[in-house]
Image (cartoon, rainbow, N blue to C red; front, side):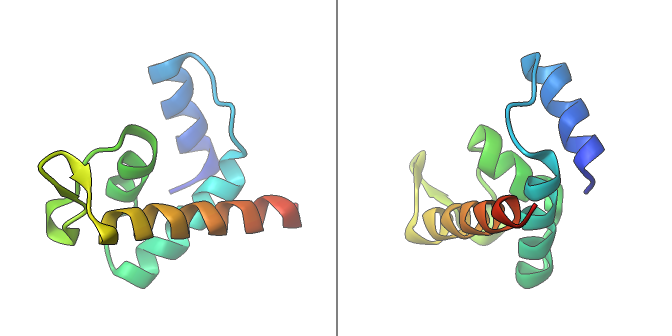
Length: 85
């Protein structure tokens, strides 16, 4: 996943990209490697709250502890990359 892909998706879907797309791409790609899971699924979990059944991120429409943990870890990595830019 690249910063350009993130920017294009957010601009096409929501009209703008308010985030540091580079930091977001780095954070998502790192978590994708750790979890050995598709980066686009993680992106949609983070941005659109779409469940990832294989990672059991939601139960009855709410985040599970695992789902919240994944989101928090991506956010932590995002802010770490953002502060290093």
